[in-house]
Image (cartoon, rainbow, N blue to C red; front, top):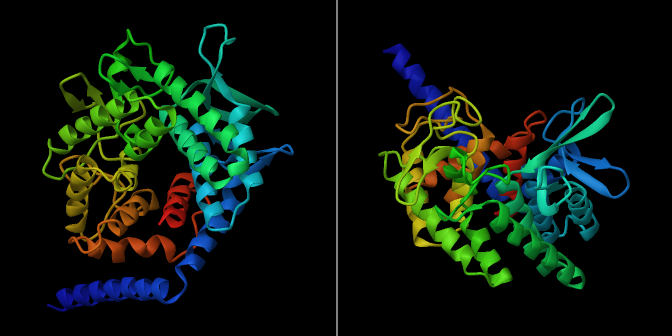
Amino acid sequence: MMKNKLIGVFFLLIVFGYIAVFFLIRINNPKQVQLKTYQEWKKEYLVNKGHNQTFVNAGSRKNPIALSEAQGFGLIITTKAAKLGWAKEADFDKLLNYYLAHQDYVDDKHTQRVSLMQWKQYYRHHHWISEYNSATDGDLYIATALDTASRIWPKKAKYYRNLEIKLANDILRYEYNPKTGLLTTGDWVRLDSNYANLFRTSDVLPFIFTNLAKTTKNDKWCQVKNAMLTKLVQLSNQHKTGLIPDFAWASKKSVKAVAPKTIAGKNDGYYAYNACRLPWILAKGHDAKSRLIERRMLKYFAKQNIVYGGYKLTGKTLVKNQSPSFSAPIFYGVNHFRGQGFDNLFVSQQYIYSKPLPQDDYYGATLTTLVAVDL
């Protein structure tokens, strides 16, 4: 009996703690929280390379790593911060220059340069190494940041827009499978290999596809958007939870989660560190399919006492700890679906802004910052 009372008291303390955070954020100027988060992220994760380049450090101070995904996030965050008056065009251009200095080559002899970004750079034996091949998500993020930049800074709009168009065209040329109508995971994928049907669910970026269709005046982006969202709906419908895996095998008509250790690790076929971006991605979609998938996931998460950092598609937890990589996108999604039965998540997921930004978790810190400046 006493044990049950203690559990009840502990639960109430947690609830009151979340409520206190809620009122703290509401009473204080929300921009103060946004600015503090952005400044912490900028200080901890942006690294200058030379006089005119900056990269987002996805590694550590001792062993820095740059990723095209991270660079894309950094460019998007900087455009959002610029809209709020916290970043300058020069900040954006330094991040952009790093991307331009690390564009990929698609032929075997590495002589045919394209607008896609090489997916990884790291420091070893006193010099930098850049690995060939691209990652589609990073290229898409860079493209959408260029689209935003062309509207924020009109004097260089033509320059940014031309870079965006070249990048968009190369994504369709080298990261697209015409047989499935879906984007592949990168330019390393040969269309005559099994990996041509590998589908990374976090590459479904409907708001970016819409922008690229307008900018390039190419309806194929609308077709890509419809085809990829259709696959997400099919995956969502396969489990009561509505959860979607990091990776799936996709044909023209069907789609199914991959087995463990297919491409990145043991959680490839689960709701893990790729699919966790989807609540942020889909909330920005503003279309019927995106909203359907989003509501199903939020409905599931709203029933959980605690949202953990990873799930099997049946709802079984992969770990017993929370993670800002999962909570930040959910917090963003709930903000776009207020008053629809998920408001408990609005309170519970705010914990990510009640403490300093993580200093050893690039991914969680960056998603937390992205959500903060994009609300």
